[in-house]
Image (tube, rainbow, N blue to C red; front, top):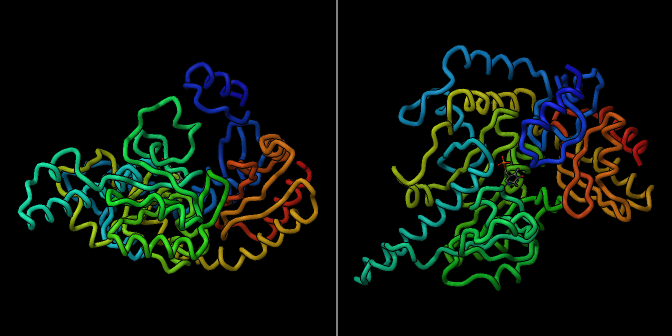
Length: 412
Ligand SMILES: *Cc1c(COP(=O)(O)O)cnc(C)c1O
């Protein structure tokens, strides 16, 4: 079938929740994709910050094929080998202590929120039993510290829980009432966060680098300030590293460059490099006093196929020195983007960290530039606030950056 026929077949049968670009990708090689009509595209989107390793990575493909031939699924009623290995590698890379595997980023956020509420619930229950108070209040549905502070312009997913902490009223509007007990603060504004804290606050959730919201890295004083507030009041810090984690900013997780360790971290996107998988990772403190058997579960989460992907991704990142590569090439990418901002009046700023970059467009619709780029064989993505987002596979080389700039300028 031609691209056009595939598009028509999709329009007939797939629920229209996305305005898709008129292209059907068929295969990939390195940092290039090919569509069903044979046209090639330089990919600076990586399936929304997912495919870090480049397409057609033989070692990755072989690991998945080998696992398919062994076993794909067993359920969480049993242990499985890839999960044991993947969890150990994620624990080591994150510096945290316990992992729960999910099937998506959204589910990782859901789990993190539940873990935070359970932690506060148990803490109150224990305090009540020590003080001899009636445990009715703490043990009942209306326990005290259930509030979660999230950030304006954040993105954490589309399920009801994750949507409730997503600071974008446009996404929330039709689905109210959402999960209660959520307050919003200004990102990179410590006073704003402080003003939302009450004795009911159990957690603060934020992206270390805001992605969908327009590529805003946390300022170091802000992130460290939030950590200090959390420590002072025994509030849990949940860092969403779904987009900015897994090497994208030049360290396993972006928070490591700030010297800030969360109590819970969420992870997905590049974690499995294309196989649907996410995780939330907890510190020992939270792990031993939050979710317990019966509190949370998933049929697929942590299945052998997904975890074989995760495990291999960690190995390949090390063997191929992916993080070192990102660090080495970041100044080159930043320079090239800065040159564009200097050259074109309608580009007003560059923001970002590592291979998660955005340039701000003013006075022109970003969607048109992104569409034009696609016509010219370049994949870039938009983000909120008129931003062209660059989240390429982490294996791009200088010549790919040069080629990206050529194709982008042609699209201006
Ligand atoms: C993509 C994303 C999510 C949601 O992940 P899904 O896998 O789409 O469910 C959550 N948080 C952040 C920061 C993301 O970028």
